[in-house]
Length: 120
Image 1 (cartoon, rainbow, N blue to C red):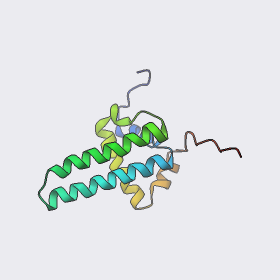
Image 2 (cartoon, one colour):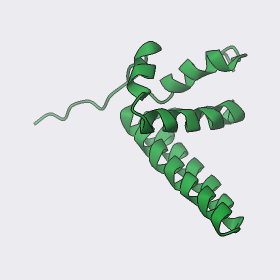
Image 3 (cartoon, rainbow, N blue to C red):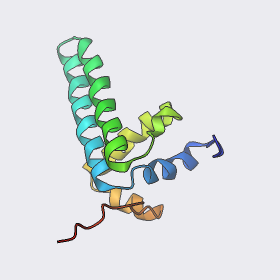
């Protein structure tokens, strides 16, 4: 790995946001994390631990699909699993309360690439 390892969460968070620079990536993450949250609630309410497996599966499936097919990058969870897990929930919460745009602006995050416009 040619990049230097990130040593603190404070340094990781802007990196995480940049790795999720495209709105579509963030929304696919949001859907997967929401499904995971519902499964966690079901696991607690119904005392059914199998829902926890579904939570893990849905959370990571949606996230990885968004990275490979939308953002076209490697999921940060492969290198920083714990910080990525925490950051996914942080991004999800910020989206729910409408504060993610301000957080992106605070860290100067802009889409790294957008789909090229289709010609007529």
